[in-house]
Length: 380
Image (cartoon, rainbow, N blue to C red; front, side, top):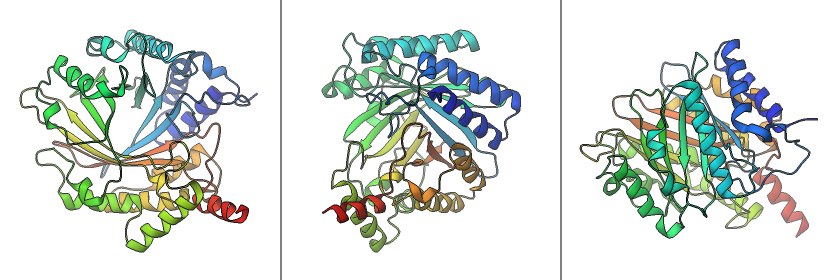
């Protein structure tokens, strides 16, 4: 019987190998994944997924990513939902908190910053699409760096901004909220926990119907990327290299899924501002995320865009192609969503970073937009 944990653990082992981690580290990280997932790791993949999770398109509670820098090896990460399969969102959150505290005991870090926010993000009757996600940065040595992602809408979407503002205030970032750009909603509030040189607090915003010019104006990072660099990344990742390219993708996607799309199709673009110091209120980092799978016909096209973005920033695309092969043997043209997002990050004092997010696809492969469009036309 194929299980969720078995599927994801094999992917982690192969990804760790392709990322150059030792066999000992690879095995340790596979065990860590199974531990964090808990009992659902033994869940048969013959059973339908828990559709309350939106961590991925097919509701797999696992997502991988590779963070690239110039002249260096990419860093492998895995995003997990520890409370996946819980009977309620409240129980999902409690399970997630327990998992984080167990990690803290195991790896010797404190959870003080998270504990100070518990009443804000874990009310008795939470709302919203998630309770807690946990990201592990898989570095050599078998002890990952840990991040948590929390839901600003836990006490209701109308209170999201107040929740983010109060969370920033409690953590000493009293002026940070005023530095954020306008957005359509607050998506995530994230914390670095554990052994980080400069632990960050991060605020993610959603932006619907964003243009390249509007994306170029989102950064509030002093000395950060120029508007031209952000706009260029936006066009390359979203497939808006030319007006004709954009129109073709738009037509295929709308024919396949409709103007709004099924479920989570046509996700908003995302921005993230990171804060590390409390004196000025200025962010120390800015990232723009493009949901590339919503603007590409298939994963072959999404990979072409990722390769172009990496090449523009002087980064080797070889590890990405090896990682895709480590996750799945399917032809890239047979689906869209294996490459979920592309992100361009700037952090003060560091070179730009490009991150590619890779889906586990434990339950389902989303069909390519062009194929679904053809099928729809035939039926009609």
